Length: 212
Image: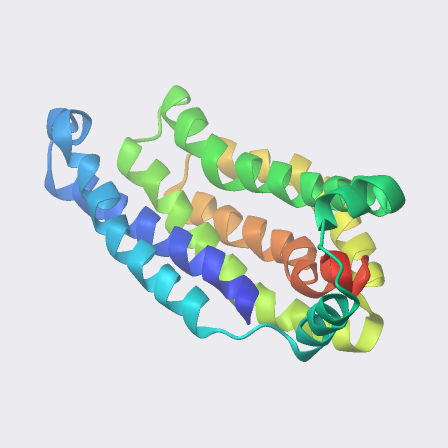
């Protein structure tokens, strides 16, 4: 569920940009219209700070912290990770590179690419809306699949699927047809959610509790 926060935030941002682009001129958008979403994002920062201050640490983390305090040790998790867990760090970075690279290609690059092939800016902004909807739908589905297959198998599946869809995606975009482009956008982050859904549980499990 926690992995839904990112696509919901992207949906709100993309939707707001699409609305501003639709109701105002291009000059309005480029001068100060683009500032409106950034001003409103300050409200989300406050919500995030409230949520972070309200959520307790996991029982495992609290137990490990109490044990270190009882031994009189000063925790230095960053140095501990670099000295003794460098391999998992590199694997974790590699795991994130795949999902992050796919996100930028699927969700953001079309905003530049589509106007270059004659598609209007309004349609390009809608790509973010439909792609985020695909991720919102796919994330809980593939999160559930992780319970049955395990996160590693789901990540491998996601790597294969996204590698293949990365080539097919441009076939959707190059049609210039708005419904086809939106279908491709939805499918793009739906496929990405195969890589995205497992991360919240897969990455912490790669490290012992005291360095998470």
